[in-house]
Length: 291
Image (cartoon, rainbow, N blue to C red; front, side, top):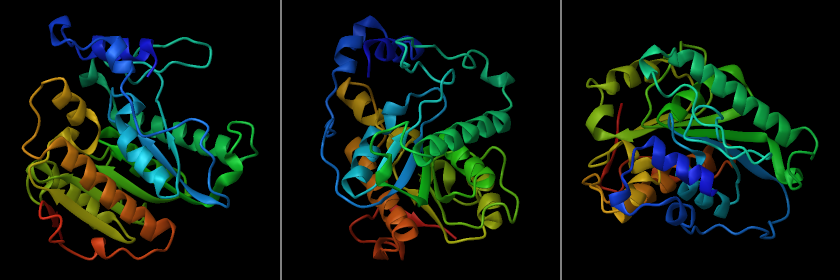
């Protein structure tokens, strides 16, 4: 994070000064990513990641670094004017323009807008090499997308709008709108907390309608003890800041997310069968297979 991005997060979340969280220590959080690392030769699948509503792209860093370590090119999309601030190439960090009155939003329109963002990113990364000097590494025929919360709705909207995206993942997000039968006939994974996304209860009702509409390879997994932020970096950061988190440990939430999302893309983009997706695993007793 830049200092301006970190400041935006603190201001947007109304984190008090008494918490000890400052722009300086938030922006200095270290990761397992390195700039200038030499990539493996050849072509690699592209996975685009979209964060939750109002959250910056950095909240999916743990998933991004893990996917990259398994041979994927990963693009984290910061949806400008939709989050706490993304520092642009000109040095400006525009704040959120749609966060003050979420009750007035047409979320289906916002999801469609995100789909346009993602299609633009895919265009930039696969049409020539002007946007990124390593764009030649991307296998433009093997593209997937995963999103957390509203980013999951964006993943579905993008798959409907852009047939280049061959596989999608919704991590604990409500669908806006619910896909119609025939709109998504490509692989899709729904991964969410058991408290809220179990069939027949809460968002599980919406997920059930989506499940019925999905026409391709599909999996519906729920995680016991997880909360909404178990599928991003936020529970890990909140734990380090001394805030309460879900019954499922933050590190375990990140681990489960990484393991199942990577297995799904390995199977759908690389053609590598993953027994992890065949059914319940004794190593992951928190994870239940639905429907």
